[in-house]
Length: 428
Image (cartoon, rainbow, N blue to C red; front, side, top):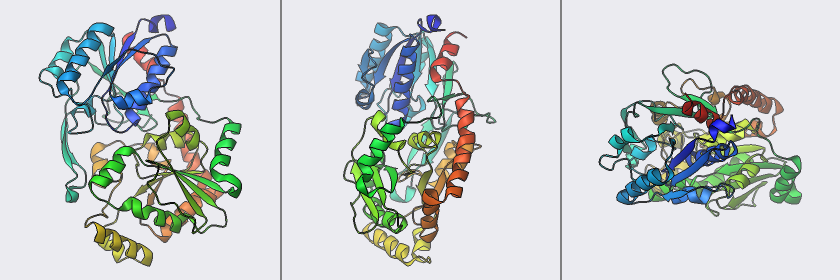
């Protein structure tokens, strides 16, 4: 196959300014393409430049904050690299009101795609490429919401669906070809895993919990003055600090987000942003992975490695939590509301995705992945404490969840890779 792939010249367009999932997919695919003999180049943001694997040597044109400069970079990339295929990660994100380098809204750019002498492809990580629509997303009571106008894709644009986040099997009405991001099952050399666990657990031993907070969530919480991260250590102490077995939580954030604690059996360690390989190794060394981002590709990676996962959500109103049975939850929520009225509200991804948004996005509709991770109420009190205890110590509960993960993983493993899917498109 490689002699055919070698003729492919793929320009990868990565417009995202914050959030790493889409860009890391592009980097992974670039490496796979190069291994098959294809030529790759990037039209990409500074974020992508920081994330690129040093082993990937490729031409590079920058995407920044200036739309006119971006249009010139696009024109230069096409003229100088002469791609046979342009792959967007992701095309719909280029039309978002924020978070992407401006280019798509430049007058005439969309129309110019009809004259690009290359196959057009987009990844669709979340389902935003499933047709023209308009929708409001975000917690409207805080003013942290916006109108998302998602255009119809160009008629000749192909869609590739990254798995494990998309359902790997058929879904009625969905367009696109599912592909697997990694060779499965994901695993780590046992000696490397032992070394990572020793580094973080030390002489205490016990269980390792990995917690991840994306940069865009940190920025959103700070802009909205939401105090959740100030109170999250207390919540974690209540849920994880009372076991006979010591628990070490390694939270990957900005390096100092969560207050460290030594009052209980729980110890919290903050880490700054890690390289993709270091983060993956940490993730694959965990006994449990937790995140407030239930749409995170990191959670997909963890479940593909058989790591029990919990998505921290909130489905209750502040008033109901204040009137609830768990006194400490009532006091905590009251304090949060005193600091910022409206700070506690139902969310699926903190702070920007409310429950109705998940249904509008549609990623988890008819998707078996929902059975491969646990949904844990952040303010669930005793029920959440019991749930997390089971995920850490109850072999029946852990094996039950990992059985669902295994079944899902088998379906994902049967899929083609993105590189081979692109080869198929190029030679269709």
